Length: 269
Image 1 (tube, rainbow, N blue to C red):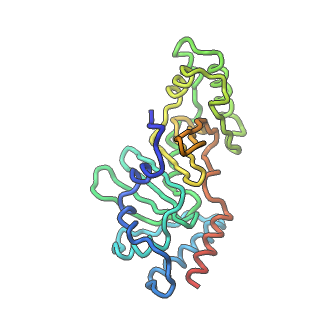
Image 2: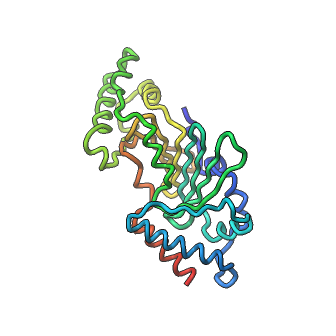
Image 3: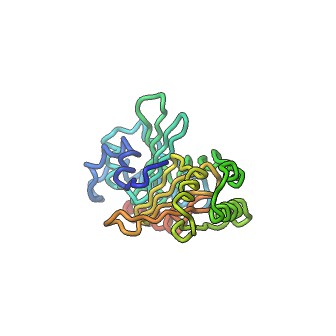
């Protein structure tokens, strides 16, 4: 089971290696002092956002052959946003953090058997590597059979698992985002422990600083754990489950991408 006390600082530290090198160079954008290559990049990113808004695929800007000082120029202008993602796979570890322009991401890729990592800028509502996470899940969770294999369990838990499977496998699961708070359910502490056994958290982690929410994957499609900070001063959180193909509500929409494009266009005008 994952540590439920993860916070944004520890998550960012865990995610990025290259990006942290550039934090010291982050300062305000000054139009007259920027090299032309940076202005060209910003124009291309703005154009890529327009294409994505029209339904085109994500666009990548490879930084592997760009000098570090140049990447620092990019970093101090694009900055860091409020959404970050961590997805370790068998051979590769992916991490992404939104820039201060929604729809524009820093993405780092680390091959486990190789030293170092690669860095690129990706333009899109959701980084491409995130979408592959869904393909690694079991299509229809046989949670009721798993629950029966445990022997005795409370009636409340049996009823909840039955309804959860119905939500996750129902027709509306691909269209709606349903949030279920465990504190509102008549479940005992033992029931909650059993639920964690049935729905173990995977290493896929998403953190939204804006909404103070952590989302973790499970082995089952359409089922996610979500923790939301209800009182950050005393580290109080609410625990629940999301039933949806993906927590799209945490990600930027078309309007957000359009605003990012306009901001970038004004910067280079």
